[in-house]
Length: 300
Image (cartoon, rainbow, N blue to C red; front, side, top):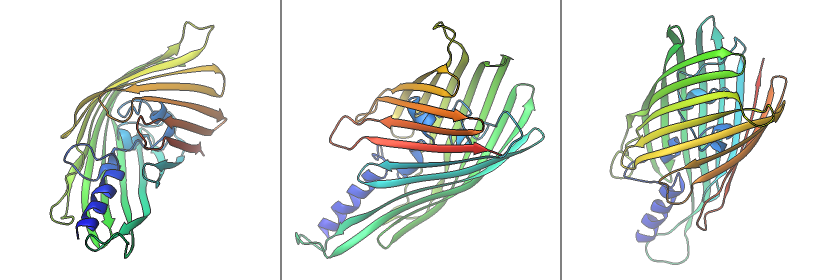
């Protein structure tokens, strides 16, 4: 069964570069293209209905119903899909989200035989609900509960995770904002997978955000920063900047510290009325293929 064990290890790595001793690495994948292009900032910035996956305290600036879908390739020829909707009732905001990572055509070997005896696939799933409520003026709190599952060959692990978040922001006028956010994500457990239960990638994040007019011919834009600490993987700094040269067009770039295979990010966003299309390019430094992520979102 040595060859099969090697295939299992490669599959686990393919789920998300499997840094550290935690499992369920797909939970670390940034769910939306806009934030991905901004250095994968997680704690700050409302973008679309997928934003509460990053921080459950994030709420839309209106009472419309928001929907979003992300489609992305991922390393080792896997596919990533994220869906979410968000609605508001007075000052409360609630929603649901679904994330799926899948990959097939992994070779199954029994012993050192170089010829595979078949194929197997990987399926990761997270589905949940989130709620954001005001605590006092300019300050919101949020919480999320999700059911998670990781299935590979004939092995299956299930569990629960929860997220907590805080968001303070002050809008001085239209288009100008200062905000600070904090999150604790992927708090929970899972059942045994193969021989032991993998720990979810517990993550703490502290972020800051500024939006306003840039000193570039009247362009508007923003800056974001997040200090993130991952269990068994230390601390990382995520930085992002964006500029809007004309209405409906946003240019984005970012940088992440401390990751072996990746660092810089780029992207672009298009908006028309209540429709948005965002794209992110996530280059990898090794032989791993670069990742291209698209998010389509709209409000009703």
